[in-house]
Image (cartoon, rainbow, N blue to C red; front, side):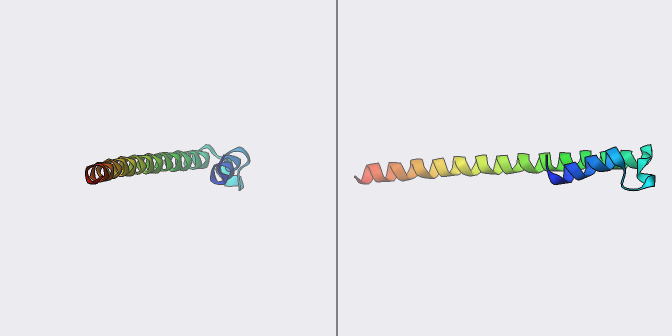
Length: 73
């Protein structure tokens, strides 16, 4: 579990201050954690798509280079 998530979970369990033990503030932490997880998920999805895109481009370049080399040889 990432350190940020551990920290936020501990806040939910114990409360950093007396006021953080109320449902309202725990809800804010939970909402913030959910938003953070969604943001990380979107970022990871974009990273995977970028890697896939570059992998395809590299394969296309390799194929083109192999064709050039086979016609020259």
